[in-house]
Image 1 (cartoon, one colour):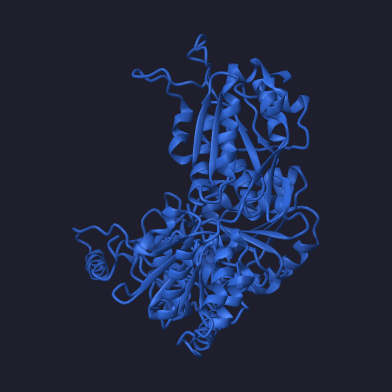
Image 2 (cartoon, one colour):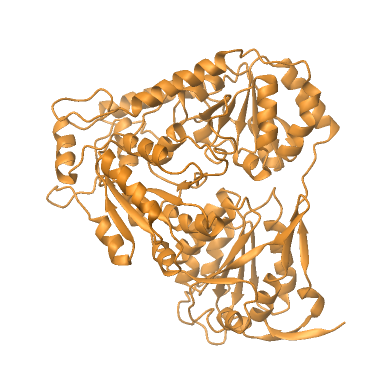
Length: 637
């Protein structure tokens, strides 16, 4: 048995080049490339190894550690977790910048390999540059902050430790039930230290991602529950998309007349034009989906975590009369809401269940069509909202006075409602274009209003709702789908939070389109504070002398080298979208939109928040009383 002498970093890169996944008979490379920001902790180790021999790995220079990790996360999510990028950073601040991104990957069950440098294993030069010190333990470094946000975490202090650590990391990343970020921290002196590695460690390694099949007990129990129900509803979660269960879902829904409702992660698993697809569920859900869920006597959760937004803080279902059936590869998720658990792959489960229900039909009858038509009429109404300077427009929900709304209209030089802009975009861009969003009021508008007519074209990061994911993630979409137009739908607050990888997209000529909704503030949170009885407090972007900020984001984008547009009317927006499609470089369309012109909550929408029990504000007191009433209907576990 031969050996090969390599540094730890060289062994790492050689290993990454030989990792493959095998899914449904198809074999492909698992690691597409490496994002990097080199510093003194990794430039002489991993940097040297990549320069010497990167193999097939694409090497991309990032601009912010969090930003480039978000690119990698979005790439893996869009690739349905079949491929990943690795991300390498220096120690100290570079590593710390990965924490937010790691949390984003963990909340969304997305595999990504994080390779932060660590301090010296020998400890002889300590404390080195960018190393902090703790009196109770010299072993603690910045990278310990990554432990709670990693699915797998390890620290390499000897070259030979790399072998077992990498195998464990890839086992975790290629397991559908455990998929998430794997963090391997490599001491910076060890990166450059050599070892005689066994040659077999670098042979082609195939990770088989087999579909977990349901057993007879699970299938019989699930079939009994469905047959005994009168109005079952399927909640389509993100796991359904990763399972690629679209065709099986459609057959199941059509044959047995069962409506589909979607979580943010599950949206676009099945196109909205499918007659039984009622759209988003919960706090940001459609009227149709929420009404169906409230009528249901059986909820079939498929690949969903049942977050508070999907369940309206556990108030949208009739827990006195409704039973739950959960299909999930994760045993933990399958147990939620005291459901009958089927711990199995969604596609395989529906394939097996389909013939077991012959003769069954739900009692929804024509109700599904009626609910959908009612919602489409409401969506059409929202598309026609206009701003009235003279008096409050009843179509626009607002706690602001008419004078304040007029002030925004004057300063931003716009009368464009957010919903109108969003629907215009949906109607104008190509159906196979891919959109991405993560935070603010836009995810709610998108879940309710956006019609995805091509599968896997709706990319929402709403597990962590991480501000700053949007622009970075759009580059990940482009890397995953180089022939398609990709669009970042982002508010001004999130854009300001992080858009560093916009420059990376321009640098590498990966065309992305940024659709910037500017209402000069954190409009979503401003709504939240005012909805619960507070005033407008530090959520608007105003100067010390109370003037609304009017930032020229188009000029910023032009400075980066992008093609920029300003669109404050429907006509300008349509023209900008059509011209942006013709461009071969990245674009940004700045839209000044009026605050308080996003969609409001519909029936079944309620969010359990920490409303003060004691307050001298009448609005807060009423909000607290409402919360106590809602909690009486909520499930307590």
